[in-house]
Amino acid sequence: MVAGPKKLHIKTFGCQMNVYDSERMAEALGPLGYAPTKHMAEADLVILNTCHIREKAAEKVYSELGRVREMKEMRRQYGLATKVAVAGCVAQAEGAAMIARAAVVDLVVGPQSYHRLPQLLAEMDVAKGGILATDFPAEDKFAHLPERPLTRAQPSAFVTVQEGCDKFCTFCVVPYTRGAEFSRPVAAILAEVARLAEAGSREITLLGQNVNAYHGQGPDGRVWSLAKLLRRLAQVPEIERLRYTTSHPRDMDDELIQLHGDEPKLMPYLHLPFQSGSDRILAAMNRKHTAQAYTGLIGRIRAARPDIALSTDIIVGFPGETDADFEATLRLVREVGFAQAFSFKYSARPGTPAADLPGQVEAAVAGGRLQSLQSLIEESTRAFDAGLVGRSLPVLIERKGRKPGQVTGRSPYQQPVHTDGSDRLIGQIVEVDIVAAGQKSLTGVIKSGFEWREPIQAAV
Ligand code: SAM
Ligand code: SF4
Image (cartoon, rainbow, N blue to C red; front, side, top):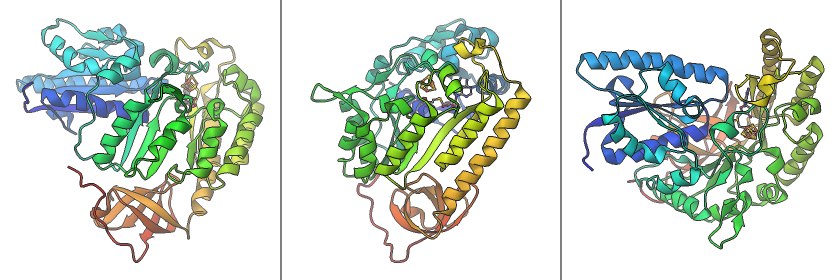
């Protein structure tokens, strides 16, 4: 293939799994001569990697396509051609409707067809109208994407190990847009982590829509659990930290809970969505757990790892939610004391069972509940962060800070930590005395006596 000076701009919406997919798409297009650019105006190929989880997210894509259309027109006046692709879950869900609604789109490509991008680009050169590629099996994608390059990798990298979902919560589009649950084989994950480690990554976050439902084929021919996979990854010497997200309460088994107690490389942070504190609403959501089962689970996790930082997702205004149901959600937030929480106003997604339920909650009522919930979450987060002031924490330095002479990293509990320091520290874990807790981050001072050391493996 001939390398050329072509530019690629990818704009990513939504979750970390989309961030990972965008990286892999850029890598798949590298051999065709596409180099990434941050500026859309420079791009010969624009990809919007979209999210369909809430209504606003899909609308954001259509308004972004308006801006892309203007950019394409401007470039056309300078004699420059621009190809436009829409990827991700909006692409999967909208399919041909997107090509009909937004003529600027040349290609609609679903999350399981990214490995076909080079071939689809060639087809775009000769096609008259927009091209649709929304086939399903995830196996094909992972088997055919190119290996991760051995160029400099982020100190903290994502690796998707599981995709799709069979749980069918009544509010959620994921089972329809990402398809059935699929776990990548252990050997493929180990190979990817080894390459990332060699390229300089020190922390790996395993990703999946239901990551703790992981059940991939092991090299021994048996099915491996997420706990077994994490234990194996902990043996990779360069990898100093492991995380995983997002988990479902039902798949949080004893083996995984125990691992939080005895594997020092597994960070003391867990994102475990509970969605609602009301059993009636949980049943209508098809969550298959009760509020008590959730708090019981939290008790067992804290028994294994008392300092663990807990995070969650919560939906307010699900159809039929009363003030009493919402109160139950607030009670659960108070009881657990989350270090972090993401809260959403219920958004009816076409094609999901909840969209047709009676008792849709008025937007103003749901908005008021969201505000009260967010104030409570803020209090909880502030209390957790304030408890870290005065402690000394190991921080993985990830990038330069906003101010000159500053660097930013993450604590074991996942908060960003700002500290004065040289950018030669990027990729290293340093001991930091935490001196203050801000809105969404901590500030600290690198412990005196800390010495800079050469990275374990020089990044290429
Ligand atoms: N698999 C994860 C779980 O079971 O908790 C969640 C994955 S989903 C991509 C992320 C979050 O988006 C959910 O936990 C839920 O809180 C929120 N979400 C999903 N569908 C939603 C909807 N229709 N309206 C509002 N929030 C929604
Ligand atoms: Fe969606 Fe998560 Fe429920 Fe699956 S388990 S349907 S991804 S909210």
